[in-house]
Length: 359
Image 1 (spheres, one colour):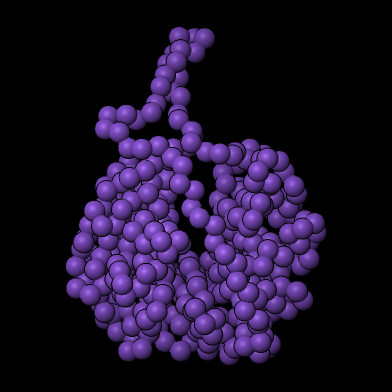
Image 2 (tube, rainbow, N blue to C red):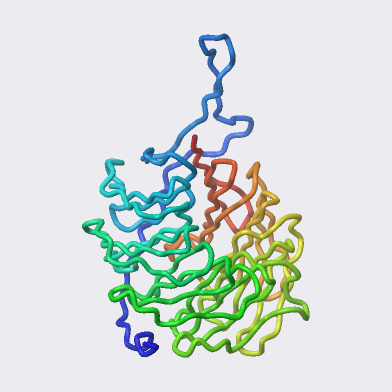
């Protein structure tokens, strides 16, 4: 086991680009959809499209997208991944070789590698600048749900539906650790800010804390006020030793990594909580957000555990949410939805201030 790599990885930082601010302002009663007649006389619906680029080579659903600089990587149900040039929309490389749907893609933090994970139980590592296959990583007994790069080096993590999580050194393909203990699919995972702990959530309704160097599980959150159904998503507080989790049981839970206790039960959603996040401003703006398949975002006060705002506007479930990374805009949060829109919200009022629509 090469656990010492976790301590030896050098810090690497990549600045985050400002979130695109162009969009359409919200106007009451304007859904932006127009219709025109087809040759057969049937009404065809035209959907508005605010996108600045499109990528159209996939022959099936697109399951995962990753962006680094001018490159975009996508993975889909056609068992393929593609690398595109963001500016032109042209294909740079086709990443083939998987025998089932590519469910996860991710650039390493330095942009040197791309990882693709698939339902064929493998992870492939590619050179981002040439599209050359570096390694095919095997180990999981079932499909790969997600892949994640360590924030300080080219260490790669993958979660599988077989209840295990695998960690490899990308440069050599060496398996560094296997994290076994969940009794259901490992649905999400994140490294701690220091990189010296790993947090995983599972369909078995537990959250586990691991030591990446030894593979030992150091804490398990389960029962006793924790989730009653599978964990879907995780987020770590920017300063304090706390985690936020979302679940199929329609709740988000705030837990302490110090005491192992559930600090707050954020209830109020009527469907699964698919995405959670802390405001990056931390103590100056102690707010957490949860996005749900009930079409809403809820904003929670971390000091009182009370509900501050409910953001209404999406017509279908919310799949992802992200706080604006620009510290000069701590009040903006962005959401994506099954309704084919992205929305920006002001967390002070809960109002949607901008929407981007797609076809």
